[in-house]
Image 1 (tube, rainbow, N blue to C red):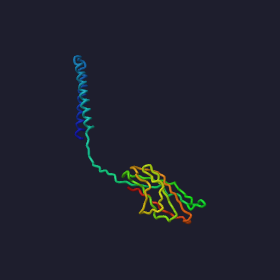
Image 2: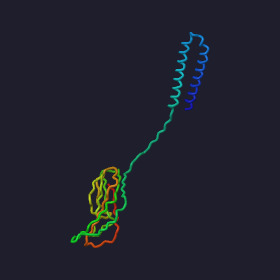
Image 3: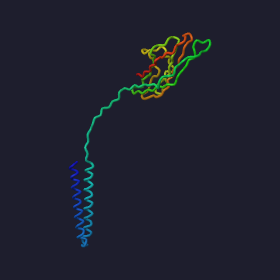
Image 4: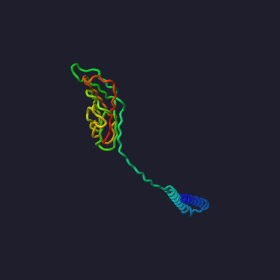
Length: 207
């Protein structure tokens, strides 16, 4: 780089001296009409040559560069992500139909779930309770889906961590956001009353 800069400086200095020489001689030779045409032509040639040399020097200076290479290792691991928008509202049965054991069910569809997965088109969502419910009480779950196939309304009343049920299957690669979660709670009059109790529902995104 320093060598190119020195060469550029020398070319510019030399060009300046040539132009100064031409100008000084031009004053002397202006009275000699026989030299006017040839002298003018020579001056033009010198100027053109000087500009060309100067341009080449600048181009050489601009083109000078240095490079360095790096190798970057890239990878994408399997990603399974599932999240919900929060907890549904409380489900409380308050009425039924005279002469019918099954009381009127109550539902909640105020929550949503979202998933992201980059594994395969065979990914699914399963659901289970922390412990099975007592006989006479039912909890059903329905997960909507645009990336997979919803199993519709699934009775998860008897599920446990070791016996989860499929609620969405065949989920394609990518993301599925803000899909509706619907819970439906039912009970039989013969099962008696039920004090407020919490059940933990686990949604699992798996292959």
